[in-house]
Length: 318
Image (cartoon, rainbow, N blue to C red):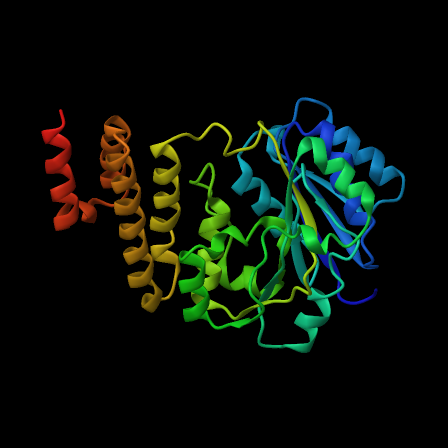
């Protein structure tokens, strides 16, 4: 399949065991014009040599790294790839995941036929490490295995933002999104202050201002590997919710004014929903940690009657 150049950004940090599978899966797609930006976030396990060996074998790989081979985090590492990308279209693949051969069969023609679209997203399949390699080797369409299936159609910004905040962020895993270069120019780079949830922050900013379509035909286009060494793996309890709240809060100065109320409302709803769940399940310590952290993230929560009532109830349980 020929068409515009696609830049695939592959950040990696000590992923020697998985990186060859990720890069090889990109090469194996049915798309002719690719550049693979393998961006090293300060690896010490020889992962960069794996990328170099594949480049020497003919894969269209460019290897990038931070000054001094420093470790800057996932957002800064993706940003380095974005700033160096030459393609008209941009895709992402984390170094422990894999594309399926038909990754670009539907989304590229869809974007080219619709000038007003800024991006597409498609379903992916999640799998534990034990099943991941078997699924990848099967080579069939995995239609019945598409566990994260977004609805079809074109989403205007207002509708897309509401859908995303209402739970559609589960669809927007990195390997399922394809962006026009104009999206990056309009929305900017990933938020480097976020150690995790930088992708949620980015998708909310995209959804607040852009026209996006689900281009899927029922097939998963990528496999996402689930294992214990992922960025979210060490996040527990209230910390998860606080990171999500921070991801939403840092969107506010980077989205159109009309979207800010929706994001604030959802931030408040998510906080109170998590707080109620902790309180109802007797997890008083987690509830208190959530309140303390959430008020630091968004001080305006303290002025809400619901927050004050929740604080009063928590004090009574001491």
